[in-house]
Length: 109
Length: 115
Image (tube, rainbow over all chains, first blue to last red; front, top):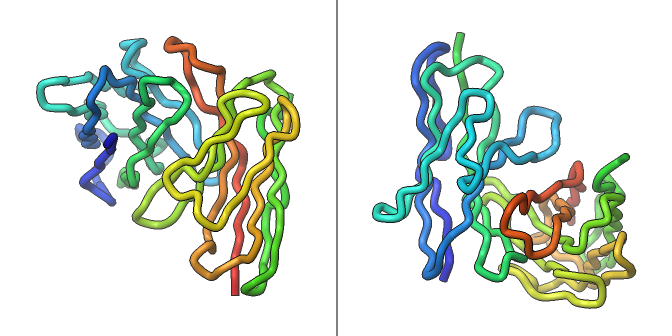
């Protein structure tokens, strides 16, 4: 069965420090993975997807099929990065997207 | 362009009452979804509709029913509300089956309390 695991419920870092939000998945096929973010008082929205291999707001995420991971990284955290982050996996049929439990990131001044 | 709109935003129900959450999208998306968000459990898929005329169960369908009224609208019904259904409910939509750009667009959420 497909599953997305985000082991950290809460992550607190200082401004300017590197940040890594962990995501591990289990899936029998070829996964399509995403990171979504929910800022305070805003809608849940897409941050980035692995197939685009893009950097958004300084964040990057690399799909590691050997370790079945899709960790989100940023070299220098900013206070405005404080938010709830969800890792998500879309199934082969492309209709169902499963989310992890989420990690709340606090960036302290 | 409002995106995904869901109503009501807040609702308090008594155990056993029924209600329907309404959702509409104006992006001409084929696929629509209902998720619930609970602390420590993240977002869990209740039901989804891959295209107009079809609906399928997600991870936690028990106690819910859905109707894909047309391409724009996808409603979620609680027939007999229970305290365990206290949650934040999100409606969402996406393009159908396209591997590139399969972004999900979310509504603002509906806060439901069952007492």
